[in-house]
Image 1 (tube, rainbow, N blue to C red):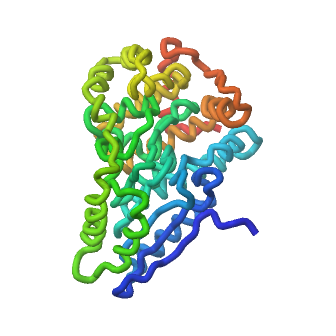
Image 2 (cartoon, rainbow, N blue to C red):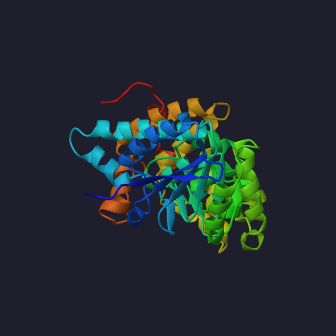
Image 3 (tube, helix red, strand yellow):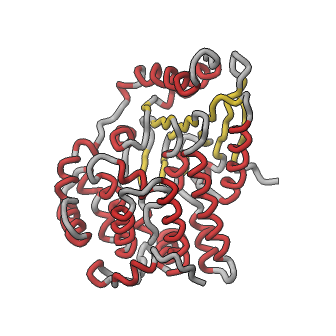
Length: 361
């Protein structure tokens, strides 16, 4: 019998309430989000929302290397390349976005311990939590443009809510963020040293949940350990380079922005390294992010997720996503053959098709 991909527990507090625990449990593949995980977590969250004894949910992952490195894109590749399996890919994105929305709108505190690698679908799980904790080991990124996709899982909503145009920059480049970057961009709420995790849990379990609102109890505990962790907090590189990011992204076309960003690529600092991926990114994906980011500026979360589901289904069918996964993970030749070699060659009709509500076979 295979090991359960998510482990569920319930910790009894000193007042006989329950802290419900969901632990991603596939550390060998960096806890990548699978359909099985989604289908286990969604109904369990519903039960916990309805259980009067449950005062909060604790979301974590097995192992110290990654919280969740993204979606199970190898399975998605099979759905795109094996006959008759496209519906599986459609269903994955449909249920993943439903789960993400469920976390965003959960009626009780959700504490996500975002230690290690948090990418793509992992960010989808983390960003909707009410209390998002990062550690000195946290490494966040949305590198979807490198595999022929685009920043999804509600990114059109939360990237637009970051300071200035940092959300546009992070989606175009897939730049790696540390814990301080996550705090600066609004993707995390608290920084706590990973070594204090056990003490955080002990404090939550021993807290009095009856004399204060549950969010206040969580904040009180996390605030205490955050204050003890300040010496370990790194400098935010996004904040350090904010003015340069603003200047480079201040243009009226995607081509101009990408050109300005690539001019920074000769530098040896974080910003220079962050833009190097633009050279190998899918031009289609860059254009999708640009369009989706600007179209989503005034949209609510539910509308953004609905739009992203339309886009994701088109990505499953149009070949760019499959080619990106092939080059990275299947053949591992790192030589994706994109449909268009440059932004200048892309037809606007091609990009507009990804936003069309008309389903493709």
